[in-house]
Amino acid sequence: MIILDAAAVRRATPWLELVDAIEVEMASPSSVSPERHVHGFEAEDGSQSSLLVMPAWTTSAEERGLIGVKAVTYIPDNASRNLPTIHANYLAFDRVSGVPVGLLDGDTLTARRSAAISALAARHLARPEAHRLLVVGTGQLAPVVAAAHVSVGQAGCAPTHVTFWGRRAVAAEAAARRAREAIEADGVQGVSVTAVDDLARAVADADIIVCVTASTEPILSGQWLAPGTHINLMGSFRPDMRESDDELVRRATLYVDVRTGALLSGDLSQPIDHGVISAEAIVGDLAHLSSGSARPRNHDEITVFKSVGFATADLVAARLALARHDSSR
Image (cartoon, rainbow, N blue to C red; front, side, top):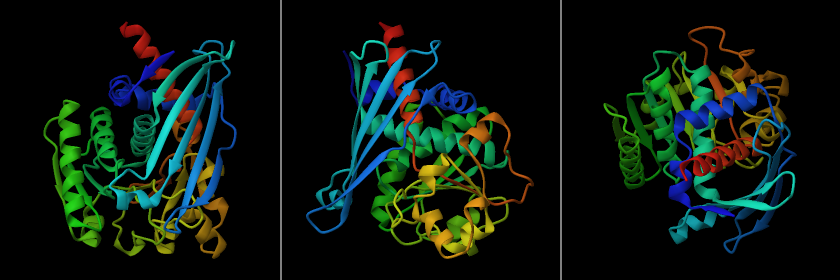
């Protein structure tokens, strides 16, 4: 069985290849991903933690036949322990024999597929001249998101100015430093990366905004947005979690990665429950974007892409990593 640690997964999932692979899969699916299981449990401090189980398998004989399952823990209280809030492992089996063929570092796999999904959405929804990226959040995913957008942007929309905002200035500075290192490691030059302390002004100045927090209260206000802004909301995945206010989703044209999972997020479920929007306000998902059947209608349109992650993207990333590992031996 192949074992790929964090560094090996990172090397085997270069941004452009990963984004393109997810886009191809979404445009013409060759896999099945049942609804993920989310099990809640109470942490020591009384906060709500979660265990997620996400299976998927290939159906096309032309692809490497895999059955994959990711197990993820989400422990918000880990911030007080100076530990990541999310930990994961990915186990891959041969689809024909059921024999285990790979164990991959799930933290890195999750971060890279999540960042790749965000970059793919921006490829289709951000304006071609969008060069200013704002990342809201300072956790383990924030620098990875910046690196993905900058690298994938070389093929189209290319952010050259990246800013970070966090509730603590020192954390924002640290995230900016990690992003700068990741971008340089990817060989991308000419990108400025800084931290900011005025969120409202940063939102108004941004072309693309990616929010990656564990917030249960809105952080982004729709009143701050300039026409033509594209926003990716990536942090919330439960009904009690939310990064955007009612005005933001009311002003925007809404897209999601996968409709079923995205509707469980508070960013959509709460405004739907309050009558601010309806579920029909979602005009397309990642499959529509990837196939070209959905796209922004005009230059000044504000677009929101709500992503909660999905097992098909994990499977695509794992398949790419295992295939590249095999070819390098």
